[in-house]
Image (tube, rainbow, N blue to C red; front, top):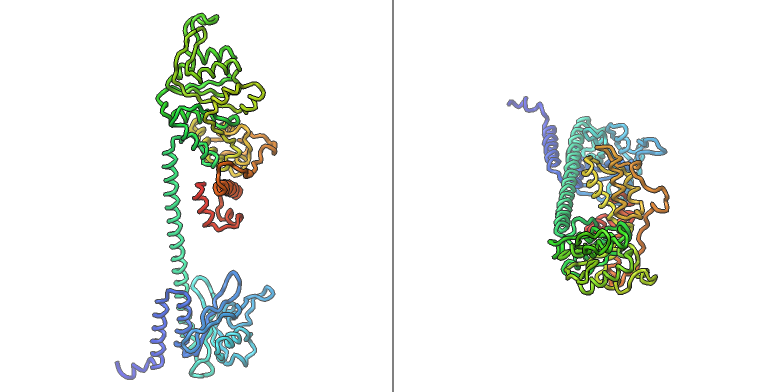
Length: 543
């Protein structure tokens, strides 16, 4: 190449291109946003021989410009205490400041002497000079434009070292080209930073899901490992029932199941039998109110031929049929007094004597009785034998009403929905929000039995592939029986203060989660605890 050809590009131009290329390399290596913004300003200052510079970025939410980076003499300057520049005044765009002008007009502006001109507001620059020790004179303000996002800030370069006035067009052009490339680098770094944050959040969420899956798997395994998978319930009161049931499995003690009608006493009796050492033997059930006294006596104790009119053959009673198994006597509180005396003798000597027979036959039977009545009150009223009561109440288990089983209703709704949908050959996709609210708020005086019947009717009324709606629920409209109240904590003898506090806390969290439809963030805010604390408690109490 000849010397004349080499002069096509002036030496100062080549030097500027080299500086520009070096500046772009610096920007391409930027990872940390704050460091990148500093290098943007520093590289721009070096590119156009400016003594210092500042970079303002737009805050869309606050509608103002924040000073994000400052350079004076190739070193960082600190700008804590400098107020952001508002972009609107009295609801109208404010382009009175140099950064505001760049944002709204989207054009560069050059001011030869900042403190002698009157076109722009000097306050933000004056504040920066006061804090940094810099003395601003000439300023080139450049719009900071991100591709696709418009102008998002302003780059101000001050005090050009060559002191040329006015500023050469080439300096402004090269500064504009660099600023556009710098904006791309900043946008890419912002996106990379957000992606890394999203990846971290995704990783954290995946870890949470993995933990929850492990936790749920363990719960399912522990649930399947328990001897009572047919009984739905996870509330503290039901856990006490399960504990007592487990205690009843390894012995033949007479069990007395007490509780309101529909609480599942019959289901518990069956579960105790089928998980006890007598599971290979028969399970015989008899409701003591289903037959008149004479027929009930013959049904329980059996009879010999000729014992009464119509007794043409010998017939074994239910007690004898239950030999080596379990006899479940439901509604024992309504058994007539004469039969109570005969039952007491069987419990005492383990011998049953049929009607019309003089000999007793030894039986090996476990007795489980159930009642919805207060037997002690029946004893006081002379309607139930006291000695029989104490014989039956060797191992009492109180069955809680559904209104005290906080959190179990949703489990039972899910169970009965799937059960009845399968029974009637329908696919039900769930509950509408209003229907679910009504089902959760209802008092259920008939307890679990009533809930099952309500769900079966709803499934029958619901269209296939549809949801359970409010109109499918045949529930009383009386608000006095449809509003569930939180359980008031009461002293429980034998439990520590810590245990009772945890039980009440469990009930409270369940109720709060129900009120806020399972939204953990809203629930945590309502309880004035962190979401992490709430999640820990949900896991701790196995909600």
